[in-house]
Image 1: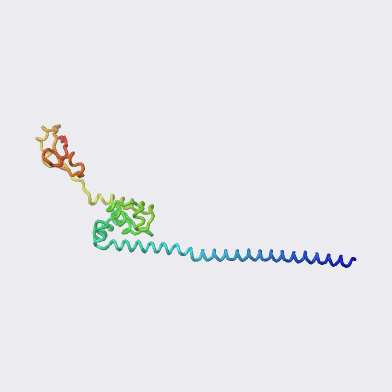
Image 2: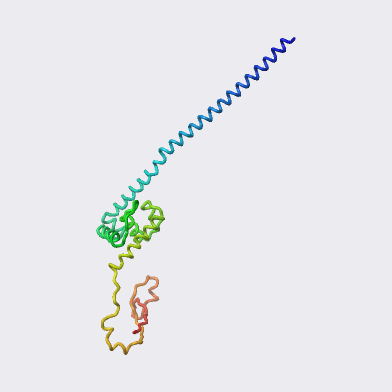
Amino acid sequence: MLKPGLKIMSHDQHVCETRKRIRGDDDDEMELNIIVTGFIIVLVGAWYKKYRVKEVPWNEQERARKRAYWVDSLMNGRICRDQLRMDKRCFDKLCHILHFKGGLVTTRHVMVREVVAFFLHTLAHDLKNRTIGAVFTRSGETVSRHFHMVLHAVMKIGKYYIKQVDSTVSYARDNRWKWFEGALDGTHIQMTVPIKDRPRYRDRKGDISTNVLATCD
């Protein structure tokens, strides 16, 4: 009677050991899957770092190429006049003056010709920084900053080309004018106004003018 009992116990032990081996195999398979998954993640990360990072300089190089192409295309005679309101000769001369007299300098990433071009392009067509940035593939901040740099250079060269006119005529110093000091009178001065406002400025003679009060000082 003992022998059959011993056989049953041995069978139960065999079943338990088999189940343990199966669970152990499952654990080993899961561990292997984790290792393989981690290895794949490492490979993907290495690939991304190697190839994806190199894509950024390529994009910047492509944008620089497009900018150079656009600026060069503006140098076409007709396009230059249409877009910048001056021909290539005047544009080159303006760049030269702004650089040497206005202190406008070329940076590592932005050339003088480019910033002068989008400065003139903005003024010629009353465009926003965002629009100019899209045309020249620049950020709005870059466009705004360099626009004001060109504006500052233009203001600096003003003293070389803009001279205040002496509004005092020579005969105004005549000694006889002293008898008219303090005299005042009105006069009509012709002017140009929008079409919708012309009826308000039309005088008795049919001219478009405004009444100005003049005085002798």
